Length: 482
Image (tube, rainbow, N blue to C red; front, side):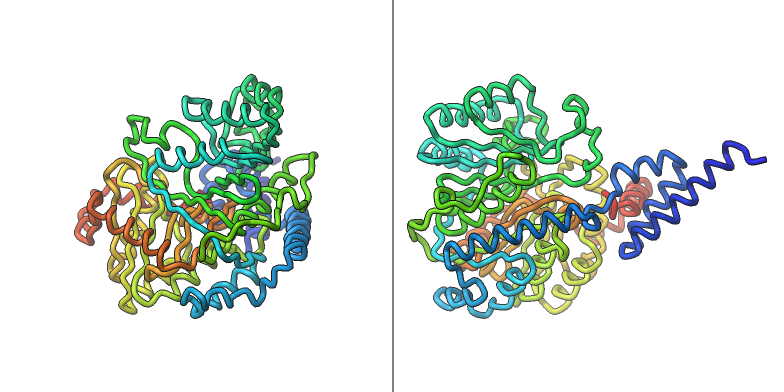
């Protein structure tokens, strides 16, 4: 007669077989989950149900992808954007050699190339928020805001108060926040709605007071976007909270990266906001001229593509953009990311670039916010050092920037980290810029940051204590399901 333990083992074995079937394209991920199920019978299954779902394989993802593409083509038709031949603008700024990069992102995710953008680069929180607040102050028609985290602290409350005031002035204000990242008190949400601000939550938890009771907890909207009047936009790594101003003692100075973009790229970000809003709200937006004005001033010359990816996109557009940038490098590749957990394809591309004589440098924080992920990041950096890749640990506070700059010619700045979560699970958006000026600024900023770093050497990796090696081993074992 079968005992309770026997039934548990049988049930666990059946669940394990089902898991292998569903993860046939990700064997390392399947092995990690199998190990969890062996070590934690039943509990491992529950964890897999909560954290291991594959959104990509669901019909919901396919329907969302089809709807998104329809809206993209509505915008293209409305503005008569010839996005398949738009690479002619690259010739004007000496970037025609990157036609294939543009075409990759167009064919992969309809990331049409925009022209004549004026771009301002920010690496300091005070400067960024001063510019953001000033731009919102000047809004006349609408303000659309999307953040992963908005804190209920001094900066967060000042930001929300500004949105309420603009709404009372007659400006249409929409606020979209993530259901796990942002945990504002209900009285705060109520006061926003009373002021006329339209507020929605992306993939909300089942119960507001239990944010982690969420069957889609693994799929977070990590984007940070603000669009004003369809003409001015902000994108980058900053959320809204005191730490992003360097006012939390635990972190000290907060080093991040963001952009203000004036021009048609603002409308690409507007479209991204529209698609996410429509996923979260019954109050649907449409491609209307009031959101996508045709009289956008052309003040700059920077070609920009807005690239988005998530579990609803089939070919990981942001990861492919990173890979393509690595392959196009001729002189240098400079990467900044708070989390560096690359998959095998990215690791091999970086190794190949470094062995080819390209100057590859990667900067991560010396002070971790998530120790588990930090140990994995150090493990991968140590693996790359023998190939000539140089690793740096930022020591002046915390570095949260998510950037890559290649040859001082093309750069990517946005919300996506260099990790499996950003490649596969989170909804992310980056701006890819083809500009000697802007990419040159990012390269110079990276080189300036080196004076605030200590270089990680092979000797450092070889001298790691046994306990540290064990931590790295265990962390890396589960890195595919972080």
